[in-house]
Length: 203
Image (cartoon, rainbow, N blue to C red):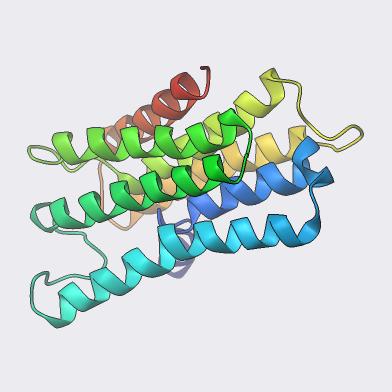
């Protein structure tokens, strides 16, 4: 069970989840009509900005002794990584907006930025879950896609929604099992991510 929990925590790391959201948008909605090369270029751009660059910076901070745990399990070491993450979300939103992506897609990144900001503030006093904030945002995106009627005709998108919800539950369980968070911290993280993305993408 511990190994499975560690795998879930890695696969659904907050560094990966934004790319999952963009992939869902590009391959499961009407955006799948966009030329394949453009979709891959934007997805890889988002992945580089929201995952690779922050991961390298966090690794560098660990090597420099600025943080003790590269997994950021120490609440007091999360402030600078949160700032880096927020900047990466802002950069991804800018790239998507300049690529003429639909408003709801780049607002997904702005919603993520808002969730990171809330997490950063709350984290000063309480270790709210970043994993579940990311998963909450992903679930909110799938809900928004369904409500906006932009699913590719014939695509069984409800399975994506169900998978996202189940994955969020599994990740939350894993984080509690690994003793990284309490049930309350996991629930608060999910609610934060869900509300930020769902409300921001409504504009």
